[in-house]
Length: 310
Length: 258
Image (cartoon, rainbow over all chains, first blue to last red; front, side):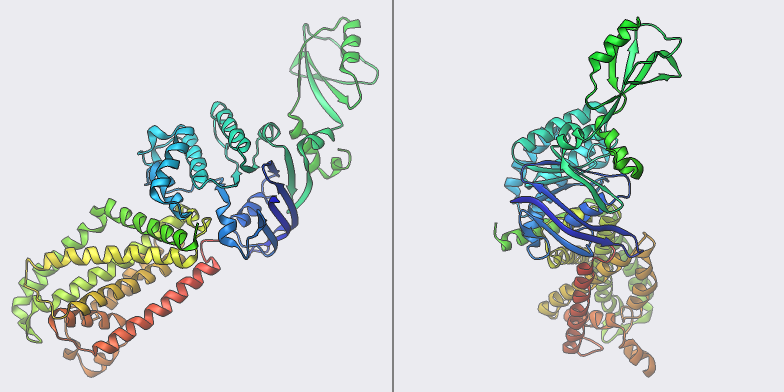
């Protein structure tokens, strides 16, 4: 059984914008799945349709085999959503917000209190439970949206850029939390602009662009498609001229003579490069990827000229 | 979980949330009608009313009391739903309900009951204010309760439809200011339509609020300008039309779904 099955999904908005052009997508049960794409690619429209906030023009959506058109109550009961924008009442307390959400899913007050305590505690909001939501910081508001989405213990959790605008420390703690609930069996569908986040958390990935899925595979096999990676090498002393080394393309960094960049193709050995540099009296003291691997791929996939070469 | 339990819990959650909302801001919702109605009773009832004399066998202050109570019920049931639903749309927390497995009729009923609750609470407060100025002996409790509930349902639905179409805060005050208030003032709150020329008597009968005010007045004082059975029929027909239209708006997602 798939947690989510989307077939030939179409959306044309009233202004004529053809946002989704018959996309197909499958998310396995228990998966941590990334849906990536540039702004305006169709990610939020897809999520909007799954959560029924956007009306589709065509196609089908199944959540744990429940047809979103026919078994809407069952399908919606399976989904928890953390939207991109803050969308709770600014005048209600954290406790009221999660209790009300529990009520909308048919959870009675006593049980709702127990769950509210559990999730508000896990997300570090218990001490703030009686504070009105408008008094929370941006990061705490994001956490409150996660607590709200989990209160009915959904089997499919959809996170639409959950860590946007969140500081690094908080982002890492949210990753930890999301990994844990995924480990406990909740399927997670994540959209994010932080590609490092997707690479770090997700096992499978789809990339959407101009309303079409241009890539749908496992993270491992996608990253395996990256033929060329660019590394930054920090040297122990500045270079006057860039050495020529057979089989490797080296580049100077204008701002600093003690840094060079090198493109490594799949199959090339970094040890060969280091020994050749060493023969020329050039010592590398540290090395790092110029960009995140997924970011590199993402940019190449979105660029039609380089897509074929990936 | 059974559907009935899910729906009942969701419905009671919306009602509790709505009642919490208007009682939390009682200074904005409950107090103002009490003060303005006290002024109406003082000025129109006591100061001017004593010079007007009797109307249909009752002192003027007693005659206008049911109309003023009904005016508060109408205004507040309307205001509750229009402001709450539009506020939820504006802050986007309406999405909390839209993504949940709640059918549209439960959402609508929840908002209606919230509007009825505020209408009745304000009606009760204004009745207590009225008792400072005149004695009221209820002619028929059944008619009073029935017309109060039906009227507040009707205007809760009106507020809901207004909120669905509203795009900015100005839009939720246009209908109350330019349509509702004139209709209430011309709906027999302050006078009997028998005092009007024949043409205006007929014209007044096109005003649905006349039927509510007069039915309530009949329930309290036992006098009315119109047939009570006909009035209940008119109110019920309006409720059915607006209820179906509201459900249609929710079903099509007007103003709330893309």
